Length: 484
Image 1: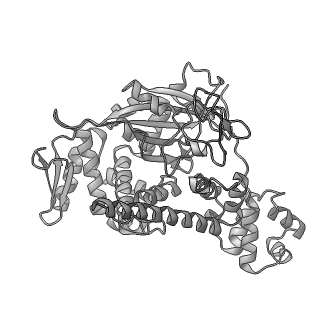
Image 2: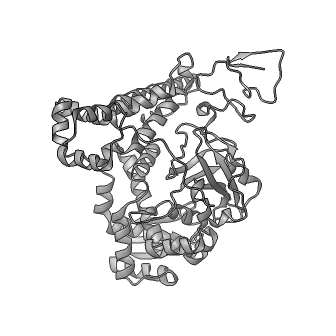
Image 3: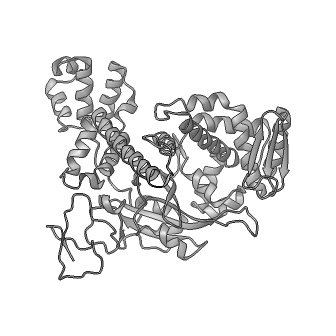
């Protein structure tokens, strides 16, 4: 019997209603009259003793001209998670900040919560610059000042807030395929014709001519150069990427005019991500791809052959299937290197990734390095009780030479356990087996019996017992924080 997706707590929107009422300068009686409900019922909603129904939410948006996104719970959850990670800094070890109060702050006073997080980021940056100055004074070296929020983090937040779905780019990709009569087998040749229409010459350069350069566009010479190290599928992807930069400049510029993207570097990184999104949509058009996904039950390897793309490109595309009425399984996506550094992440499943550190060592993405090229499965459970079904596999870039470096990375893709039977990788597995207990990262994980714990949990004091030796220094912490 297929499980239903794990139940999550109903979002508490009462504080948002109260904040809106105060912003409008209304009493509960006045607001209740405008919403055609009783003042007592409004009081219960603001106190989170009654849910904010869908009909009443629509009424609020209509009467007070409010964007429904203002009531989206995902923003509160992400903000609360960011705050919890901030309070996980050793700077706050002597404080006792309950998680419930942090989440309440994010829900009831989101502007204040963002201000607190901004102050933490500023403090963190101040410490970075202090270390850089000390380093410069000691040996003459140093590092340039870093922004409070790294451009890569800002671009990631931008993609996450949009849930990695951009309808205008989907429409543009479908329009291009229809107008140029593109199909999978003739995609590269068709895109070459598109560039001839632009008056742009496409050439293939030798690896020695431009070491490390896979694609380069010269606007003065109207020349696009692709490396000979790129296989045909990657050449088509790069052509589609560059086409969007040339033909969709106005749309891309509009999309990156977002408050999250505060500087030019962040906007450039977001623009690159959007061009990659468009290229994926051209190579894997939404409706045919979704149909193939469902028919193959998310067989990533089969899909990569059918659409002539890489394993990673299929995984990326799976996270973008959010079209209303035609949604795919909501996945989370993670890519790490062999040192555990996260180079790319997105959460459509609701699972959380640490902003300032790696991920839990119990995630199967780490174990995938032990079996290169093979898909590993895992049934896991986060401390909040939500269970996930995840797959992981190593990746090796398919461009390079004998003397070149062949970097190996690992990719993880997962969903809530209730969707597992939609995936071919769950065949033969007992989904009701005991899940692997995992967390976000050691400082943010509440599990005190983990033998792979590298740091004590947030606000867990430690009293060292010199006479006792356990299997792991921070495992099996007692209620008073005592350990070996």
